[in-house]
Length: 276
Image (cartoon, rainbow, N blue to C red; front, side, top):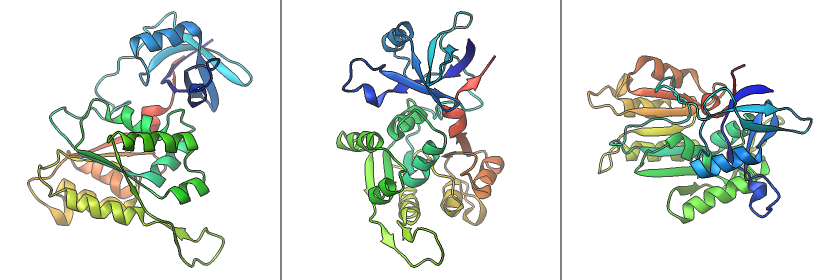
């Protein structure tokens, strides 16, 4: 048995199949399903998305998890480092802008068991944002396999209920020399334009949550923080959500230099941690 810490997401294959486990996770590239007793506990105590101490019975095609016999089931983490959610103060109501291609590619690289929408919910925690904009070109995302049909369904369902707003762009074709795919969607330009306008909207947002790591966003982030050439005494907090691989040097520097800039790595929020 291996003692590890995992978060469980809903199993999309169980929606129409009663014989499938309703929850799933991943450990070192393999699927993990809770045993019946742990499944019942997750359902009854609403532990979906929480970090849990579990023991793994390793299998060839998948692993089975049961509640730890030596540790409390739910892991209680200190406020820092940031694990799981951003822990935004309840009185702040930030705007949330998600670079869909960047975000969904990151989840795919991490082999996350969480869908894009489940990940956003987990990271925002109990926060009540003014708005959540998800920027995407569906044609490009599907063609490059950034997002699954289940992931797209979850985002569209959230948009139907008003939890998020989908901001779509059509795929553009540009001439590029060499073997690169000659397509561009200008998601970053659209997001930057909205971020610049939202900074001055009324009621004033409590900050910016940016699901992206590109250096293209460094100027608008400095504008929100009120630093650099945009120096102002009334800067607003910024939370950057990215992976270590996708995070640019410029955005990381903000989190090291400014007390208003915060960083949450998706690896820390989602990936399992071996503790024995």
